[in-house]
Length: 138
Image (cartoon, rainbow, N blue to C red; front, top):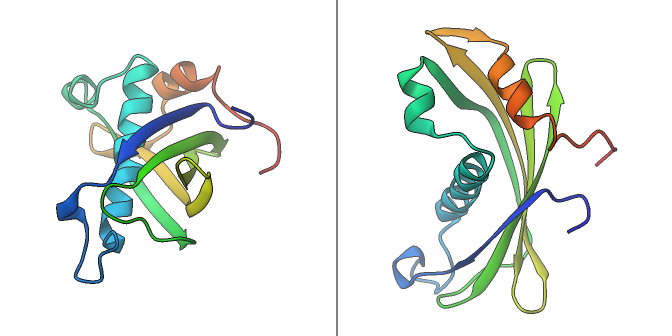
């Protein structure tokens, strides 16, 4: 898996495509978010339980670079790795078309925690993510 710490295979559904027959740009953000949520679940956390405890991870900044469009029925894999910068957790996410592994999108998603309504560092995420943090240069 290399630098990636999590990957999720997915398939394009017809309704995600626009009139041009390619995935609408907004759906890539859904793919990225779904991958982060599945990663969080695999790491042992739940968005619902976090929210009940007053901990809300939120996206602060998102950048996406589109490389190759996906079409209906295409299979792809969404991969990520993670770094910590101050109080931010930065997810580096890449999507590759299968089976040729052609790059589809490269994204960087900066997240922060709002704890009981205030922007805060999260010791819970520090503990949860310690084994996943990538300290090498991207």
